[in-house]
Amino acid sequence: MKRTLFVASNRLGDAVLTTGVLHYLLEKEPNIPVTVICGNIPKSIFEGIPGVERVISVKKRRFSLHWPEVALNLGPVFWHRIVDFRGSLLGFLPGRHRHIWRGGQDDIHKAVANARLIGLDSPLPPRISPNLEQITASQKWLGLENERKQILALAPTANFYQKQWHHENYLWLARKLTTQGGVLEGARVAVFGAPGEEAQAMPVVEALPREQVIDLVGKTTPMEAATILSQCALFVGNDSGLMHTAVAVGIPTVALFGIGKPTVYAPWGEKSLCLKSTPPGTPITRIAKTADSEEKEPLPLEYVLDEIETFYRKIS
Image (tube, rainbow, N blue to C red; front, side):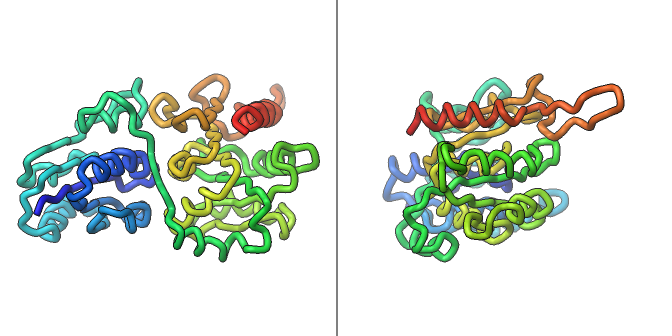
C-alpha cells in the first residue's frame, strides 16, 4: 500500500504554515494515507485530519538521536512520497518521490516557499478545518447562552518579549473595539496564551469585566484554540503561531510585527492585515522613558485602532 511521510516543524507557527501543503496532497492523492512527524506542541493540529493515518511527535535529543528513534518507530516502509520541511535524516528513507527543505529565503512568504517545495507555483496558505464534534466541544468555553455574541480574539503573547505589544495596549484596544460605537460593539473578548505566558496575558483577562472575558490562557491545545478561533469575528495578536492559526481557520487576522520577518511570516491573504513598527524591524515593546526624551510607542495605540477599524469595516 502506498503511503506518504510528512515531516513538519516542532514550532506551532511553522507547522501550521505547512497545513496547506498537507491538505493539497490529501486532495490530490486521496487514497494514499499520510504519516505526520512533528513536535508535541502542534501534534493536535494534525490529529483527526481525514487521510492522516498516524501522527508521531518528536522530542529533540542531543546529536539528533531522535531521528533514528523515529525511523525505527516508522518501521520498514518504502514511501510513495516524502515531504520533509526540516531537512532531517528521514528524508533519506526509501521512497519514490522526495521533497526536502533546503532552507528558506527572506524575500518569499512561507505560503509560496512551501508550495514550491512540492513543485507548485501557486501559494498554499495554511488550512485548519475544525469538524462538528470539535466545534460542539468548544462550547464549554464559549457557552451556549452567548452563542449570538461576537467574539474578539486577542493573543498578547509571543515566543520572545521584543515581539510583544504591551498588555496594557491590548486592554485599551479591546475596550475601544467593543465599546459603544466600536466595530465590535458588545463583543466578548477571548484572551489566548500558552502555558508559561500568563505574565503577559493574564493582566488583560483580569482587567476586563468577568462577563465579557473568556479566559483561555494555558487552557487549550492548539487544535482547541483553532476551533475557538474559527468562531471569532476578529483576531489581533503578535507575530506568533496563534496568529497563523487564525489565518488557517479563515477569520480576519491582524498581526503586529516588530523584529520578525513580515515578508516571510506576515498573515497571508485578503482577510489579513500586517501592522509594522516604526521604523520597521524595531521591537514593538515599549521604549523606556528617560529624563531627556519622551516615551514613544513603536506601534502607537491610535494608529493601530484606526487601521483595524478601517480594515474590519472594509472586509465586513
